[in-house]
Length: 211
Picture 1 (cartoon, rainbow, N blue to C red):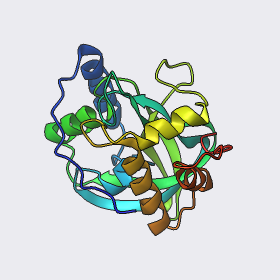
Picture 2: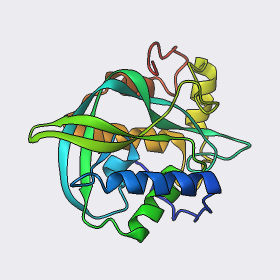
Picture 3: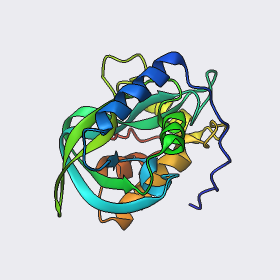
Picture 4: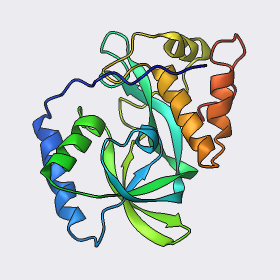
């Protein structure tokens, strides 16, 4: 299936909690020699910042799951979509990226994209790469968060994947498909994601697809 181009995103105003979180993370970043960001979803294929270096990376103790409500980027308050989150447990493969520039503009763009409603919990996590271990900034989600979907009924999941209304960056299915394609190009096979996409438009229960 052909994907549609990304729409031009609408700028969002960061609330006080998001700005305070941004200030805290920037202070923490100063203690690291280099800034690395762990990309496991759309940051892989649309980072929106210039990348000086990227490496394949693996992370233990966390996994990628399409289990976070999105009411801005991939949906609306009336029709929420889904986005990937880094959830506790298991293991995950993705990329670590080192931005070329980390000025005020970089941080603001990153936060407006990833933290418009301050839902993710930014963490510094130990990522393994072929060139060695790095501490990378990763956007995680607590399973106690009200934005954590848990295991959605298959009918609800398929309805969301079929919904083409979307949010400021487009809709959920396009987002999930682009992520799957980008992972394959990197040699990363996310079987759960592939299974979910295969059965997105069928009546078959996508067993385990989002676990």
